[in-house]
Length: 108
Image 1: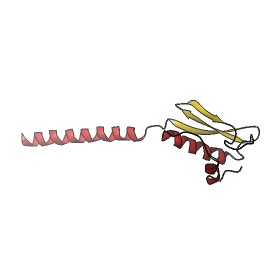
Image 2 (image 1 turned 45 degrees about the horizontal axis):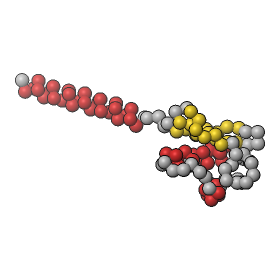
Image 3 (image 1 turned 60 degrees about the vertical axis):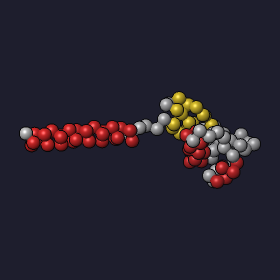
């Protein structure tokens, strides 16, 4: 009788552990809801930020500067796009300053 109780106890613990491990994996593998993507413009590159596949921001020109100019490289566009995405995640204003562009080494 004691052996059956121990087997029952350990089999329940093992089942509980497996269920916990699966739930933990699912929680950790949660898909990111904000995504950044680049796109080609006539004169360079731009970026989009989407939430659950719906575009929230489409930026085809470098913000803050007085000229209407696209990003020279895809990398530059994605750097700024990722900065804006991080600001949105932190519930901050998604505005970009000239100083932030300089710190990101964006070609103006």
